[in-house]
Length: 189
Image 1 (tube, one colour):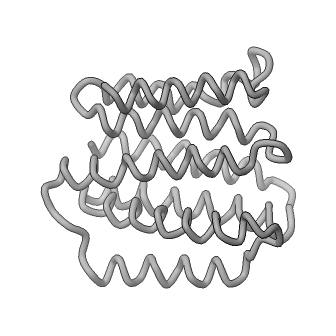
Image 2: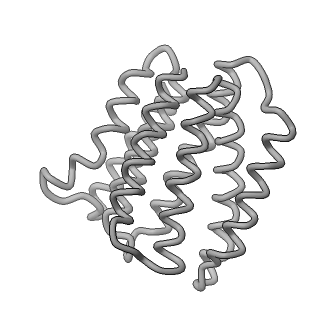
């Protein structure tokens, strides 16, 4: 319950901070909140992760002003997903999986280095947490593994667009992979 409440408070702050305006933009948070409702009360920690994901969605509607709080919200979501996935599966990810995901993240970080000093610290911390979440998701079976890997693809695409070069259709790729990842992880639970 505390994780859902904390996530809801963070979502509220994202909305109040100006990250969410109007009914059309509000739709962006609906999928994550729907998955939170689906997971609660049987998986409250994972549900909290979904609410923090919704808060991240709200903050990233204005990436210029709220990129760091958006990264923070998703960081908290991943920090909740890791123990939720491990508890649900009752097992640890395979070492080769962890090494492979860490290698992918290292290559992505090498090519997508942010220029702002604060992001030079925040992005690698986030990437490490994302790898931990994706590795933990692999313990949920094929659907969970697909969800974790798809989230990694989504975030790598978003990072490329933010820190290297934007490209046509980028938003669509990010959102399809992101919502697909959330759906697969929620269903795997």
